[in-house]
Image (cartoon, rainbow, N blue to C red; front, side, top):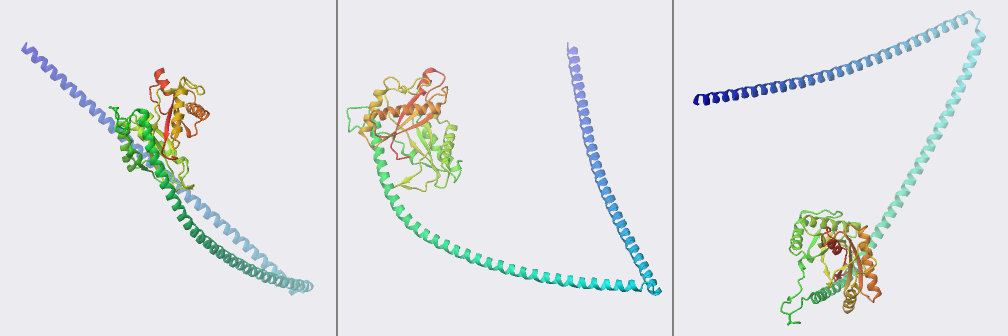
Length: 455
């Protein structure tokens, strides 16, 4: 058994050696294959270089041939011209010798006189033409000098006119600057006065809204209703969230490092209190396009959604153009937050599927209490916020019609407060869309108090 075991061990060792040898042989084969590939690549590179060198040599040879042909053609042309000049010279010399012979023989005396007369007439005509050309040249130079003088005078007049216009514009700018300084001072006084009044009104509205919310939710002050043992001391209002201002770059809607750091507080606040809902208001400067405000609000909303904030907690809007005392403010490239203070209703105000004209049962009873509340507090406003579910056709338009139906009912029953509508579409669900009950909760109307000015 031991011998057989040793034999098996030796067989295994031989198998391992054979496998190792085969592996080494394969590695050598692969290495030789790689070496052949490298040699082929080098050979191809050398062939390519030889082809490039041959093409360059052929191009140089063609260029040398072309230059040689051009030089040959130029030499032939110069040779032909020299031959033509030599032939013309020989013909002239032959004519001159013939003329001399005719003069010497006396047979061409009359022809010589006539030729001399013709040559004299030709010289006179040439002199006349020369005089006319000289006169024309002098007249042309005189006209050019006159045109240059007129152009210089016109340029000087234009320069004087430009200087006068520039002086007039400078005077107008100085006058406008002085008027702007006076107007700015008066406007700043009006704006400061109106801003102080608006801040005082907002403080009053905020306190009033807090009392209304506390009363409707049962969060009463102990001093007023001491019998309520479990009542809260006050209505908890997240003031730090509303004091936060996210600064954006001029003319852009991207978030910088500081803005992302500031939004970390918003993320923590909204994740700690999932019932807290805010309006994300994007503002613009007076020199920026108005759609940029909505883009900034959408960018902040997208950032918050990417950090696990619920869609039902966010409403992205564009802030209205800031006007104080009837004067347009300069504005700012910022994004601010306003906490939504919803009116508590005994039961949800929901609509049927794809329905926007018929109010749900017992909705009129709840809306009548809303009308009475707004009549008791005329300094408050209301936002009727319509919602829809994703399975409905055109959810934004449908939610807008639902909000308009509620607004129409409020107006028809004597509501004179400042009421506006907002269409959220299917962007802010509060329940799952996988069940009929959840979809019913999403087809809703929410009533939000507007207590923070026109924004």
